[in-house]
Length: 210
Image (cartoon, rainbow, N blue to C red; front, side, top):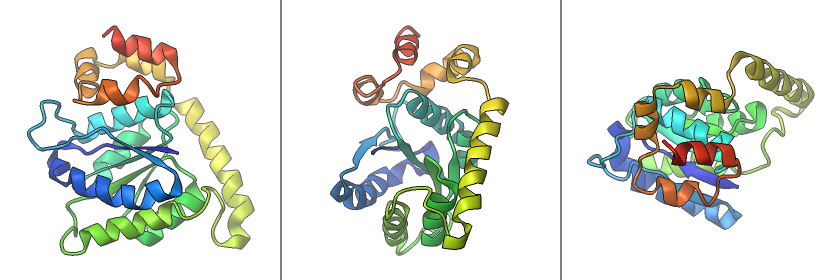
């Protein structure tokens, strides 16, 4: 699994911490972690939580990433922004129970953490334990065991509903404010990380031609 980290500007100072906690858990499992920043609060490319949602959608729909780890001060804005877009199902994660049950019940492909709320001593422990539970088993296994069948059925229904209620990604890229889109993909390492891993040439070509 290729996991992309996206930090919005208010929590950019925690980027190194988030990536370090994630790599300690994910890399021994064979996952790859790509860090799309923000790397510092002073980065030229300022990623708001809305841009984090758009960037997450680009990565998922272009198949340049399989999973997104993002967040903001409360985690709510990043979660909402991600869920606006097609094929992105983002959960709000505050603790290990959230992480495990989101993966098993909702079978999503993105998570948003509250990197400011209640993030004091032990914040890195909460993150590490949440990552451990998040990736501890194949997604969509169901929980508790007696609820597996209806949960898996409901996830398929949710995916089909979202396919109807959202536009396709190429339409979004063409219709969204183009300056906003340029700013979103202008990160220091975006080109280096995205284009070699993008599996949808149409998306790659459109972004290159902006």
